[in-house]
Image (tube, rainbow, N blue to C red; front, side, top):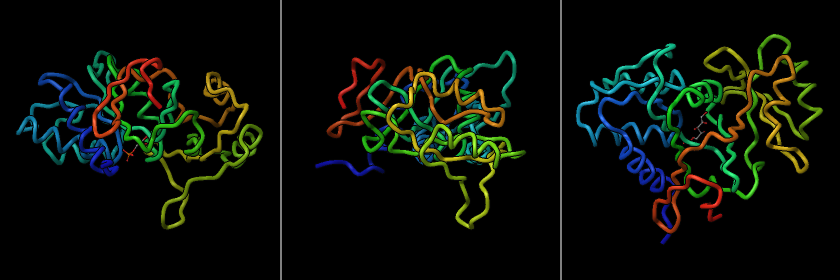
Length: 233
Ligand code: 5RP
C-alpha cells in the first residue's frame, strides 16, 4: 500500500517535530506540510507559548501566533537554531525549487541565516533533474515587464503569477513572481547568480546547497538524506 500525499506529509511533520527541542529558536517555513508540522508541534509540546519562531511568511507568522507561539523579527544576533520548511521539487543532486506558495525570498533569507536546515518533501516532489515544477523568480514591481523580457532570454516559458481572482500576485515584500520553465542546457549551479545580474530580479526559488537534512518517504518509511550519495531516486 502506498501512502497518500497527505499521509506522507503527516509522517514528515511528526519526524521534523522530533528535531525540535524546547528553548530552540525555530525558523518556520511556509506551506501545507509546514501547517501540519505546526499542529504536530502542538501535540508534542502541549502548550506552545514558550516556543519562539522567526517566520518565512506573514501566513506562517499568523498561524503560529494564533497558536500562542511567539513570533520574532529577524535581528542581527538572533539566528534560528533550526529551520523546518517544505519543498516543491528536489533533484537527485539535492538542488531544490521552492516558492510555490510565493514565500521564496523570506524562505531563502531565513534559511541562509539558520544554523541547521531541515526540509520535508513527500515522494511526489522527488525528481532526477529540476524542471517539472516551474521556477519562481521574485521580481521588483517597478519595470517588471522589462524584466519579463530579460527572463525570456533564459527561459522557454515565463508567466507572471496571478491570484485565483486573476489579479497579479504580490509577495509579502510587495514584489511580483514570474514562473519560469527550466529547460535542458541551463546550468543549475550558476543559474541563481546569473539571474541576479538582471537588475529587476531579487532572487529565484532555486535553492542550491541549502539542505542539511532532507526528510522524505520511501515505501511508507521516513528516510533522512544528508548527501547526494544517500539519494535513492
Ligand atoms: C512556499 C514554499 C513551500 O515550502 C512549498 O511550496 C511546499 O509547499 P507544500 O508543503 O504545500 O507542498 O516554498 O513558498
